[in-house]
Image 1 (cartoon, helix red, strand yellow):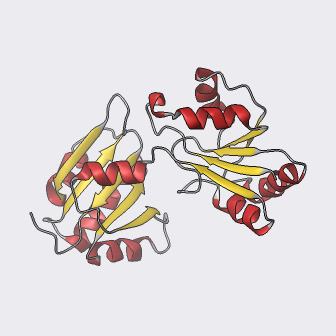
Image 2 (cartoon, one colour):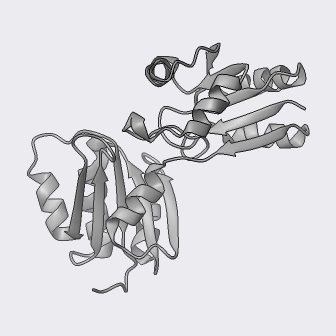
Length: 227
């Protein structure tokens, strides 16, 4: 029976790619990539020479049918994202669901992801947490941030650099100046930064910067957490 492989890729440092992940991609018949240009860097480093095709948020619905057709012909297909685990704020869920529905084998090759890396690195409680992913840009955004502020347990949010200050300002309105947070930026990369402390201080820091760059994860302590 054909297999759909979901393969986690490094979130920054290419040295984090596992031997098993390399072996699976070398064995797959084709590889679905979120961005073939980005993935080519990783594939070339590990001498993985397989046919690739794009599989991203703008063509995901259409390409799921293509993946199912490939599986039906007996081909083993691997899905990778630009960084981290496919399906976690990246394409992958629809293909996995369809594969299960049609009776194909699904196998996940685990690896690094920004969510758990930032959560553990934050030093905030991680026995229970809520993952919010990327918040909506407009409608419902403030409601979601209010929910995060009211949560009794740790919350994790993905945020883009140009929206970070606005997010922290809104969170400050709802959660207050004393809430503990950690902003993890460029995890596993050369300029990795863990900025941990009270929300008021973290906000002032980023407001003072002329530019903010990189991939960002924000970890927010529950409202009653104290150190």
